[in-house]
Structures are given as C-alpha cells and as structure tokens.
Image: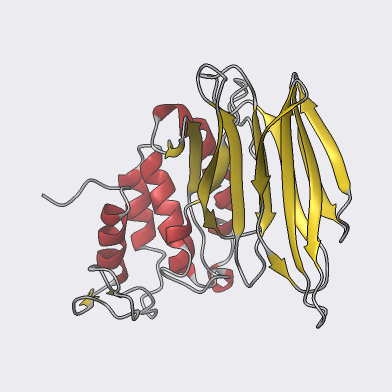
Length: 280
C-alpha cells in the first residue's frame, strides 16, 4: 500500500498503514525553537502482531512549513516472510534530496533492521511494481548525468532501478528483465527528438541520457550515429573532467582531463559509468 503524505506540524500519531500482520504508524516529531526554526522529523513506528519491531526516522527539516513524506508497506524482498516498510522524505534545499529508508526482516523473520539508500535528487518517491510481478522496486534516474553536460534544467538521465536484496540495494538497471522499462523511457524521450532544431535547448544534456538509454536496450550504434548529427558543437560543458576524484578540500587529486569534443567526452563518461565496456 502507498500513502503520499503532506504532514502537518503536529507530534500526534498520524496515519496507520497495514499489510498483513505489519502495521506502520507515522508521526511528525517537532522540537520547538525560540527563533521559530523548529526541527521536524517524520518517524514511522512498525509493529508486527502488536509488537514493536523497529522505527524509521526520516529527514530532519529545520524551519516553518510542512514536510513531504511517503510511507508504504509493500513487498520489496520476497526472501523473508514479511512485507517491507518504506519511508521516503525530503531534506529540503535546491534539487535535493530524497532520503529513503526501508525496514526489513531477516529471512527467518526474527530480526528487523533498516536499510538506507544514498540520498538522491528530488522529493519523496515511493517504490513501485513496474514489472507487475509483485516485487516493488525503486525506479529513479541516474543522478550522475545531472550537470554533466548541461545545466540542471537542461540535463536528462536514463532510468536507474534499485532492488532491495537483504541488507543492501542493488542497481539492477542493466539486467535484461529491465528492458521494458528502458524502452518505455525511450518512448518518453521521443518528444524531444521531434522538436524543431531551434527548440532543442542544451542538446548535449539530453543526448547523453538518450545514448545511454539506447545502450541499455542494445541499440548503442544507431543512437551514437544519430547523436553525431544532433549535438551542440558550441558547448564546452563537460569537456573538462576530474577523473581522479576530489580531496577533502574539493580539489581534483590530479590535473583535470580535457577532451577535444563532446563525443569524446561522452564516450569516456559512458565507459566510466558502466554504460559501455571499458576501453581495451
């Protein structure tokens, strides 16, 4: 079951969701501050057959206003006897962040523990059953594409699919079973390609995601050839890359690499992110 919530600033217990013997109660905990910048957090308490088995504590928000959160009790890992409880909440801030935590049980159902996915761009986002097989997944976009070849508004990204597997989330985007989802994503992207050339703003941000998605469905070569006739040769966004990573001060550990063209930079990026095989 899915319940998207816009929580009021109240400490009282809120909505109750159940799925079989698993019951989740959501409340909004507030710590008042003299300056009005209250600290507020959504908290989900989970019971099985009346016994508390764990809690999920969502993102901390500071300041007035309301909290966006999604609470679910759905099947995410069939290797254990109970459905999972998911709490997704918004940290606040520009383009950030979706904080998602799941309470799940051990295979024998005797122990419960929380699994957290790394925060990603956007607001609260629940799990879904895109394949219709009863197993809920986290379907998002690959955040590595954001800002890579265009501004945030001009960036696009391929779908990224996460599956709960015991105590961790696995990226299953490249599995063959995900092909229908990537083909659906390509259909959604077709509208951009049909636009007049003068309306295709920040083309390189879109084309990076489109070529990556073509690679996911086994059509990289045709996607690449079409990209070569559409990319913006005037843009230098993404032609400089820090491939050695950054130190604690935010400086690149080695001199940045400069690519001669967008196709060169894109091919290297797709190799680094696993959409293309590594160079021999």
